[in-house]
Amino acid sequence: MNPIVETVLKRLGLGAVTLLVVSVIISFAVGLLPGDFAKAVLGQSATPETVAAFQREIGLDRSPVVRYVEWIGGVVRGDFGESYAGAGSLGEHRRQVADLIAPRLTNTLILAGVAALVAVPLALVLGLLAALYRNGIFDRAVNLVTLTAISSPEFFLAYVLMLFLAVRWPLFHALSSVSPDISPLEHLQRIALPALTLVLVIVAHMMRMTRAAIINLLASPYIEMARLKGLSPARVIVRHALPNAWAPIANVVALNLAYLIVGVVVVEVVFAYPGIGQLMVDAVSKRDLPVVQGCALIFAATYILLNLAADIVAIVTNPRLLHPR
Amino acid sequence: MSTESLDAAPTAIDALPVAPRRGWRERGWRELRGAPVSALFGLAVVLIYVTIAVLAPLLAPYGETELVGGPFEPWGKPFLLGTDQLGRDMLSRLIFGARNTIGIAFLTTALAFGLGGLLGLMAAVLGGWTDQLMSRGVDVLMAIPQLIFALVLLSILGSSLLNLVLIIAVLDSTRVFRLTRAVAMNVVVMDFVEAARLQGERLAWVMTREVLPNILPPLVAEFGLRFCFVFLTISALSFLGLGIQPPTADWGSMVRENATLITYGDVTPLLPAGAIALLTVAVNFVVDWFLHKTSGLRDER
Image (tube, rainbow over the protein chains, first blue to last red):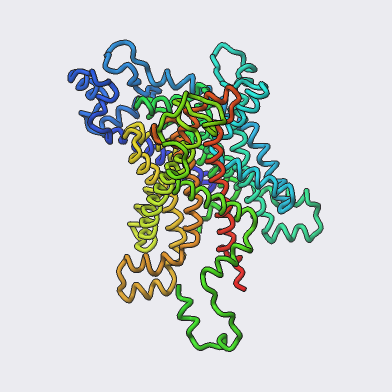
């Protein structure tokens, strides 16, 4: 078999195993529930009968293995179970977790997608410029700004933007309330501020990593050789440096898109954007476990897939990785 | 380290004029004078924060949870920075917040280093299946984003202060484990470690007296960076209402509680958020300088 295909398949297999183990952890964590959990969800007025019924329903009377198989069997069919909200009423008020997640997942993907589309090209160009003119004024200024952006909590950046761009000068919407019946353009307009916050954070991270990767590369002897031959700087970058830069750049992009996943949680709460991050935070404070599990599985799977994609790009563009030491 | 015994050995180097050894105080002073502005700024900020945290009850004009006026009173007299949503003095809450927020983050980081450092050293020194088992376990834990993992655990265990500290410490110790193991691996293969092993020294001795002193600089730098990370994570969780619980004064929750003021164009909620940002920037500056110092760019003369 082609060695590249073989290595990629091995890596895919490893990713699948990781995902499996992660799903096991998320499912088994339920076994750590404290004894008074049913009371905490159902309220102090719950009768012993409802408590018993509820415990039977979350499956604490069955073995963890049976519980896991049932849960994951549902998940692959798109059934994440029922939300605890309204549990104990044993009636028709129960909501399917999948129905709760689906519309919000779309919203989050729109937000993250817009942020990534703006941030990735911007960060790569800025990082390249900083690396080419390193230790210059541009590089130092950018270094200071990005370090500050990285060190600030996301909610600080978000509220600063809200204060200046929505309240003092009302250019954008302060809160990103969206509904399915508004036009795509309107949707974009309403998520401008959360997207901008995410772009700032991601660009800062991605730019610094791109700069480091390129500087690392420009220090190699073969680049110096190309320069000494008298090639133009543009040719050195495009023909000599870039082919070797794809792997580190793909890594940088994937790592930061994975970072985006965590960033959306806080930003969605600040701007009251109905995405999956806000859903998860709400579910955690209500201790609505099926919803938390569903969201966590989606976040973790995205994270693993992005890292997997970066590895595969690295393997395909850099044949040296086919022969580990 | 082993430089002491080398200095005493009678070699040709002794014939050269050697500058007298300086005391640590003098050396520290010289280092500080040569430090870049950013590092000095960072050190100054960290010192001020620590002073405020330690002296909080003396500095704060009012009590931490004392109701002193109406809700959302404006800046001025008698409340320098106004009052919060319940009528507590904002300035006093900020000062007590320094103590709570920094103290809890510091404690968590220390726990993470104790756990991760110990296991990382053990993995490096013992090697074999112990190392394999621990490393694979850490790989799996790191395959889930930390904030998401923390959210799952908090929803199951409930958000109390003890749970928060333990969860973040355990999750963060995975990174400490990775770093400690990686740097310790380079030291474990050296001859003096082998010699100590052949002498029959106990595991604890090899770990703490032979390996640990040689990997300390990167660990100290990492402590600074991890502190920033833990500090930001706990602040984010508190901001989401899942971290440090009221009525404890804490910067993350203070932002959430007073966030409505932003829509009226008031900057008060930005103060605690800015305080968080300033501290992390300062620590980053100091760590940058420290890394530069210890990464072989030392100036011995």
